Image (tube, rainbow, N blue to C red; front, top):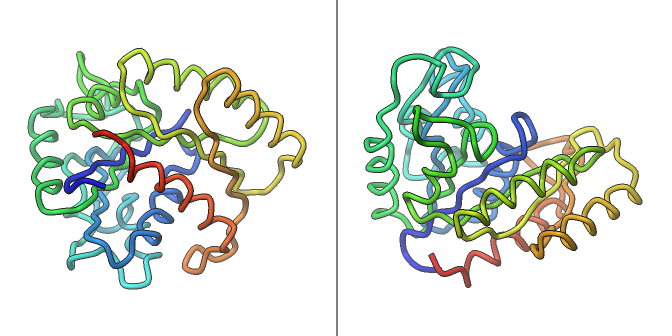
Length: 232
């Protein structure tokens, strides 16, 4: 893993579990020089209180690393729960790039969570995928385990492939553990078959996010293991 590696966590949609996966990755990287960023946050009154970074801070055993506050993890915060392009004042794309690059220079790895899906617009010309490509990130896709995920996930992977971005594969989530094992397996097999990329596993209901089960952490360890050999 090269210094300044950037792992971009995207989803097939909003509310698919990106923040929980980001939290688990930060737990797995405990003791490493890793930092969590949510460069663009929407639907948020104040980054220190109701942001995704605040969620991660609350559930990490020692809080965010390096004494960071949730507000330190967020560059652009918008009140409206909309795509950044429509959530308020114009977003300064170049300033977000610089924000990420500055943290990458100080870190072994940056865990960067996107907003919504990979083609969510940040500006009138640039999307989340543009941001991931601009900072040279490897991309990890989070999708739902249940019905509809094959189409949504494959479309997301096709978009990433079209830009020749490095994709580490997919993690499927089901917070209610409502998807039958057979359906999960069939969905995973279809995604792998058509994309040629790995589905690292399934993360179901986690009763206590401050103490996640080993089964969930094993999925995370498998996924981030692919980052070590990624050419970023």
